[in-house]
Amino acid sequence: MTHGTVDAIDVDTEMLAFATLAEIQHGDAHLLRTDRAADHPAEQWAREILEDVPTEMQTRLERAWKVIALRRAPVGTAHTVAGWTIAHTDPHYVLLHAESDFGFEGQLLFHRSEKGVLLATFVQFHDPAGRTVWDRALPTHLEFVRSLLEARAARLR
Image (cartoon, rainbow, N blue to C red):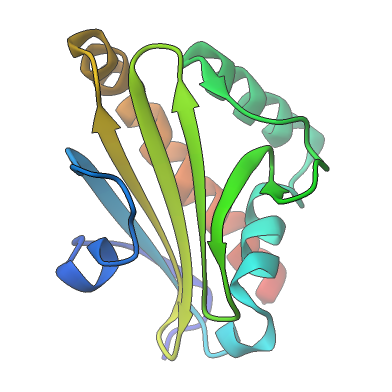
């Protein structure tokens, strides 16, 4: 296994089974390949990837989430990771949930397996404006996901 590499992968039915959205209209997934996934429960991986980041990256994340009007709790609030509500957690996966004032909601799935740590994003739109906002934000979202996972991969090396 190549340790600490990040690959964009196709969303599959196994990943979709973790989501609780009624209709998933967007999905993307990235895999941080590592044989150290079992070292931590999924929720800890989520915290390390989303919260244990340099100040500059945290500022950029906060700004991006504000631009898409994501409703999040203050960081550090119980039952949240980076302000995202924990919809489910167990040692193998954590599902985070947030809604946008623009008429969409999203979930982040962190799943650890023998392949590594998966970060998948699922989005459901309730308003056509929500899709427009998301389509504009998508390139930045994909860049953030990759950079967050690559930063975590660098700390594994």
